[in-house]
Amino acid sequence: MITVTKAYLPNKEKYQNYIDHIYESGWLTNNGTLVQELEKRLASHLGVKNLICIANGSLALQLAYKALELKGEVITTPFSFVATSSTLVWEGLKPVFADIDASSFNINPNKIEPLITPNTSAIVPTHVFGNPCEVERIQKIAKKHNLKVIYDAAHAFGVKYKDQSVLNFGDISVMSFHATKLFHTIEGGAIITNDDETAKKIRLSINFGITGPTTVESLGINAKMNEMEAAMGLCVLDEIDSIHSRRKIIWQDYQQYLPDVTFQHWNPHSKNNYAYVPILFESENEVLEIETKLKDNGIIPRRYFYPSLDTLDYLQKGQVCEISRNIASRILCLPIYHSLEKDELNKVIEILKE
Image 1 (cartoon, rainbow, N blue to C red):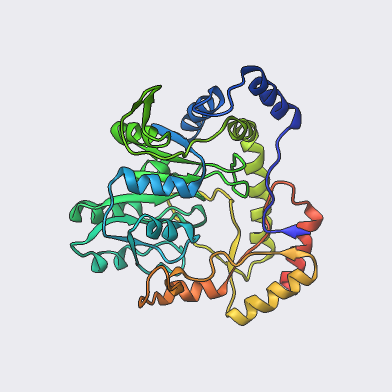
Image 2: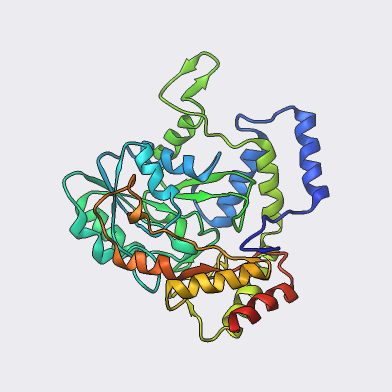
């Protein structure tokens, strides 16, 4: 079976060495030494100031909303994984959808400002498939209206914008380290912020607000990453250059041998991290036909991201984002992962060419 992605499994002996360390120390969770090491190494690798490892990306989003004390309405994108918006609703916030750009698939800054009301507290864009948003334009809008900006950067591991990490933009950037991601910790995620006070607040929040054996300073929740997950992250990080190089070759083969296919337009101030291979077809009927043909041959692509989130009743009734709905109906993500063999890749390409 050729799936859209497969979790990267690092060197087993190296992972076992970390597990042996955990057994010897008996320290399984609660800010263990491996979590501490992973945070330091990731911050250095990504070029960011404060990086806090979290149990998963959805919790990271919720903690970000809490830390910045968001209220009322939040302008976000309808073209993203559902967690971007469902976490807003979960926290009692109202997502207001701004339509996307048809070529980048990111939120269109021109659509944001008309949606701002006295009840708007923030903008939550997604770097879709790792492609950087128009961060400077979004920041200008946010500054003008005194809004917070939280980026869903779940797909943007290692992505730079104008020679610095795209994670440095906005008040907070949130990452997912789920097993399907370019970099993973089995489950997990991270919060990145340049503000030391916000980082301190989040660190307190992820462990119930506990500051000592008999002191609880503030409201909190359990959102800690454990040592087993951190061990996996350290192993994967050791091999991230190999992972990236292999994915680049696969992505370039798709681009070379499918010249008539419409690919996502990447931000000219950035480089692709090859986390996904989204392509557009002429119609939804064509997508469904090709998807069936691929599945008949043991190939499982995914319709990321379908449906457009403005069609989900529990998120926001009454809004229609026509471009997002159109793109969602015509998009298909092709298989890309480190262990995808050349003959498997060629099989996918040949079926698509047919």
